Amino acid sequence: MGEISMPKVVLLGRPNVGKSTLFNRLIRSNRAITHDRPGVTRDRLEGVVKRRGENDFLLVDTGGITLDGGPGDGPEDLRGYEAGILEQAKLAMREADLLCLVGNAREGLNPLDGRLADFLRTTGKPILLALNKVDGPDKEDLLSPDFYGLGLPLVCCSSAHGYNIRLLEEEIRARLPGAVSSHAERLEEDAGPDGEAPMRVALIGRPNAGKSSLLNALAGEERMLVSDKAGTTRDSVDVRVCLGGRELIFADTAGIRRRARISDAVERFSVSSAVRSSAGAHVSLLVLDGSEGLTQQDKRLIDLLDTRKAAFIILINKSDLIAPGQIQAAERLYRKDLDFCPHIPLLFVSAQSGLNLRRIVPAAVALREECLRRVGTGVLNRIMAQSLTRRQPPLVRGRRVKFFYLTQAESDPPAFVFFVNDPERVLPPYARYLEKFLREQIGLKHAPLRVHFRPAHADRRAAGRD
Ligand code: GDP
Image (cartoon, rainbow, N blue to C red; front, side, top):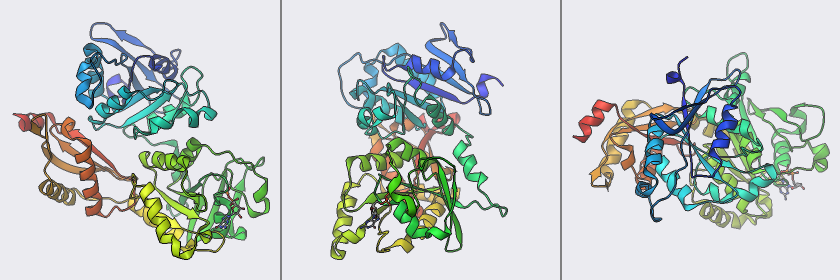
């Protein structure tokens, strides 16, 4: 039960982002012991986050990282930051299982946030962005947009008001080693007597995109088995549907109405609740209104789902309103707008005319299968060797990073780990090249994918350096 065996989460951020309030909120100091170890870990507070039925984790608060020198680009500039605090942060980071970058939504995105994010990324460790000082759901869309640009999974929260602290804690736990998230548990609970769980599908998208119409068209009202909790149409609803001999669960379909009462629901849309629904599903169908085109909010949601490694398909609904000859041109426009996530499948459909409805379930099934793919280490190491021959790693600060081996650490979604002598020398463009090559070689066309760079075992690292 010692702290050593507990997963470690390190909070990092600029001063005044609200890090210590967040720290206190998370450890709920009445229930945990906070200790300051003067001398050894100056400016470093540690506490245990406990919750009944969940594994404990150790939370480490580092001092606020400030900028001493002039602004510039790249992680090297971090050398100009207050050296002592940075050293402490680096020490804490080395032992961390998860890095939690804290941002201040009220002040907006600061260039230092971006450089810190780049710096954290060089560790290859999972990172979560806690965007603090967002006091409620109505403030999320107002205060958060710039921060999505950091490309990190993001939770809006308020340490002062307590908003989304529970969610933040869940998101942290879900990223720790050995985590079984509550969603994952829920996904397992659906398993039938034969042990095979029906696929859970989330239908998400703005009101009036046609989610209800699509579900009705796909399932046919009479075949929908709705477990509808009494109350308003905003309650969580699971719909079980048998399609092509396969049982699917359209999960948590708040805001989705059966035909009879399509007109009576007032649906509010929030990006974060859409993201939350997708986290509770194996595959999400993001429904867009093809007569309206892609809005900024749609793009933000897509970006967020993509950075959160959700498995999703974009359905451009109401394609009956696009002239048949224009669909290809429309597809090119969407693709151009979505060039940040070229692997996400796009399907032009129409709930009204029935266009491509038959392709939706097979596409979701194929995506799910990709998410569960496992690739052997032998194959992976051949792919790694090929990728290094085709394009050798660039010199970074006078040296080239050495690659030792590649393994698949997880599936659902697939995660691959390159073991290297020095992860800090793998810069983002080369990391992107490796990811693309890997996708092509193992045929993961549409699934979300994680690629990590970890230092190899200490003696191998020493051998690689000297
Ligand atoms: P939801 O809020 O996303 O569930 O959207 P609804 O299913 O309630 O649909 C919103 C409106 O769009 C309704 O008036 C539908 O009749 C209309 N609609 C839905 N799908 C289509 C489609 O494929 N083509 C056309 N032309 N209209 C559609």
